Amino acid sequence: MNRRTRWIAGGAAAFAVVAGGAGVAAATGGDDDSDEGPDTPLTGDALDRASAAALEETGGGEVTETESGDEESAYEVEVTLEDGTQVDVQLDESFAVVSSSADDEDGDEADD
Image (cartoon, rainbow, N blue to C red; front, top):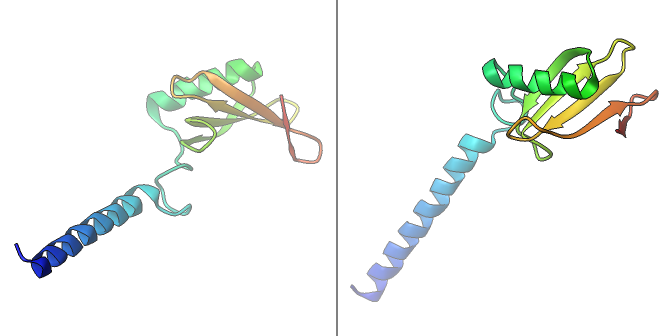
């Protein structure tokens, strides 16, 4: 193989790798307005298990929002307590509590 052919083949291979990586990133990353990714509501068994774990952590209340997959945890469940306080419960892949935080009087989160 001559030198020019190697450069062409190498450039084509590099282009294929870059294009493939961009395709994977576009398919999995998405933007925050898409229906896939970190802000996807839980459904089915994941919803049931995450809700049960969050309600056990908070001692009751009503599950008002769920999400999957963000940088903090595998699942996030928002629970509204009887007094109106909202608690965000972070869960790992096995639905164990990683952390929880309640909104304070100003609407800001305060760690529990």
